[in-house]
Image (cartoon, rainbow, N blue to C red; front, side, top):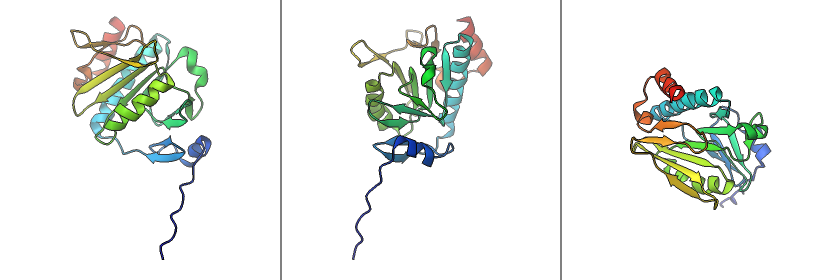
Length: 200
């Protein structure tokens, strides 16, 4: 005789944080733990490069804080806990940072896609981040060598922003940041990139 299927026990966000340690790649969706696949080397290279140049840009101008995983962003309007590849919290929102998570959406979020996460990053998370009011969202696809940039419009919907004729993206949230999109794939020496930002 078949045993009755056990119902999945829903976890509160606090229970999720207590259950999952800092080395576990996971998100909290509809009261359940969703485990994430480990990132490949290209993903990690892009994430490391971006976090370094953005952190240098932000710290030099005292704009706020750049945070990388493992770190949770708790979405309040839809009650989900996401773990972006990179997030920026502006100075006026630093009070929402806790030891283990950011309460509410960041000012800028970066997701670097994998074949497994592509639909989630472009669909589910796009809708969630828009609803949460995250002001700027970058979706970087290493396989297609494609970067899409979205900025929240006055109507609360994302508008796609494109790089300029020279292939440079101008951030709306990080004022003065001009990112040559080719850097995501070519990745110049880190100190040269940081110096270019400082001289820009």
